[in-house]
Image (cartoon, rainbow, N blue to C red):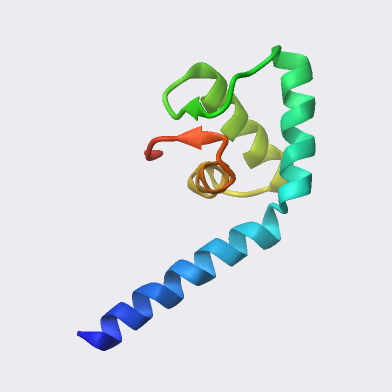
Length: 86
């Protein structure tokens, strides 16, 4: 059982750091500022089901060339999104 826990922990670390490398905090913040300028003032954290969150996730997908789940996960890690993405 110990081996499985270790693998899960390593997978979590790999997923976290790959997201951080592909979508650095500063670059994500710049994208969010630009997004907010076009969409209007946003109140964070956004609910994952809100139209603003769906649009923001799409903007991260396009801006960084990542998958929808990766974009949503990074937004949750940085505190901009609450709730589990589907």
